[in-house]
Length: 475
Length: 102
Image 1 (cartoon, each protein chain N blue to C red):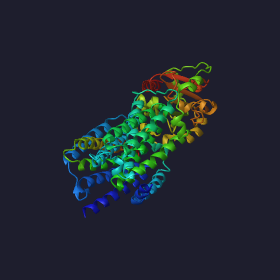
Image 2 (image 1 turned 90 degrees about the vertical axis):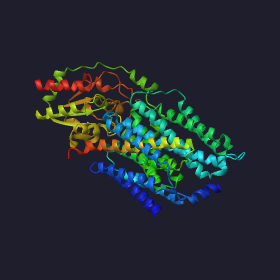
Image 3 (image 1 turned 90 degrees about the horizontal axis):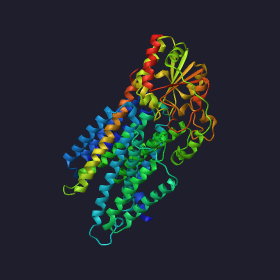
Image 4 (image 1 turned 180 degrees about the vertical axis):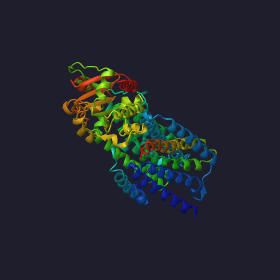
């Protein structure tokens, strides 16, 4: 009775995951979809704690289980509530890493059980006591979980500026060697005398962690969202391994669902940047080629004062704002919305042009501007925006760089060549707000800044916007 | 070879689920607008936190003298919960902002 009830709960859980994910991909239903999946998850967890039986035995160690749930729950809620909207991508990466670590830890305990069965018998290996498939799910969970954990931690460090890009020549070969070593260690763990089993298992774990670090290390910051999405689907697969291990359908459905959806999402993100996944993972940004591109002769750029900007903007018919990461780090979304309202009160039409990969994550800008109450229908997607630039008087670029770099269309040697961009140069005037002339995240120069219709307005996005608002009010 | 075949035969239900779920996963998010990429990734991230169930099983089955299983299992429950709770709360916070202006 209780077991069939648990089966029903797992079934409900699986269905809520599928419907939840479906609802998450539509703006109108997204929030409820998330809540639905959370309810399904809560049911599945509660069901497991109270109803799960293995060979007639219920689960014990309730104090430990509830203690762990309580600690994780409190830390998780506080961290998720406190994180700034700008730091969201890092946070997702961090939580993803935790899931990976969880899968790896489960495998470590299960492997220990496996070895206990063969302990004391001379020359017996783990392989003599476990069918290959059983071992495979354990070790796959351990390897994928560790790679996902280490990779996510590096991605988190990179996005929060704690870890720098490091790439050296021959890195791909080193990575390949480490990956082969992981697989070799996994085979040894299976076939060697169980006295050494533990040692080889931990060697496998250690090498997997190392591989995770090496895997993410050389990938440029601009590609980090793609990597996080990929690691997200890795963790899904690691969770599914647990499903095989315990013959647990809800873990399997949830895991594989995320594995598949995550992989598709990764590809969609690559498409938005017009890059192939292979290109992202192997051809890392920066290094020699970008430096060579930057050497090109550049003309002079011209600066514009705040008061001139204020005049130009208040007498325009139509202003288009192009937000980028600079807006996010400066937390300037509220000031931006204020400027929008002020200009509209003066009869200026204001819209936002959102590049699909503006910021550090696709959709990042939408989330930020939504936080500042910017109305949904003012946000134009790239295609729409590109149609409207020709009728725009002033484009205000706020801390965006690579997404408005014309090199993506004209310079075939540029690392971002082929990426669709916002054609801001079609507008009558372009005002670019940046902190300095330093190149953007991809590390390349931007010809746009040197064009005659472009003026530079240096300074922190938030401060500049606040000053600009004051200037316009004084007009 | 034989053991692999046996394993497949034993787990055929599970393997069917895997294959079908791959298609469901792809189908379900196929038409997501790029606006929702970040929340969707975050929501999917919370869903794979279902791995917590494995952690609870490991923890609940650990014998009281098996310290390795107790400690690792306990850690697994903590990090798994972090993934689930943190994931859903962060996603909700992101989506809350989308909803406000209707």
